[in-house]
Length: 107
Image 1: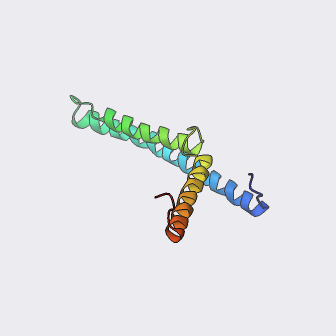
Image 2 (image 1 turned 90 degrees about the vertical axis):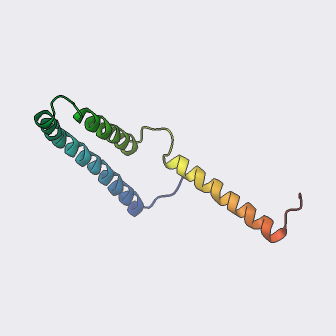
Image 3 (image 1 turned 180 degrees about the vertical axis):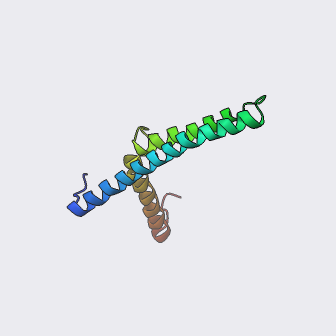
């Protein structure tokens, strides 16, 4: 069942999507600008141990996950999944409410 979106709802959704994309690019920019600083600090203070690799890799994983979420690459945890889960939860609650008000006849 497709939702019948009004123009205002479509505009709001597009605005929300643009905000998410902008936030991803801001995150990516901070990553690109900060990591050279981290690398320089590491090489100047303790060049015998390259700990910057852990920072770059950890933050890099976060960037990749953020990008996957923003650009809807994962096939799970998207809007369809959310709608399906909401329906499942509501159906389960309705069933429990019905059983408590009418008693479970199968017990």
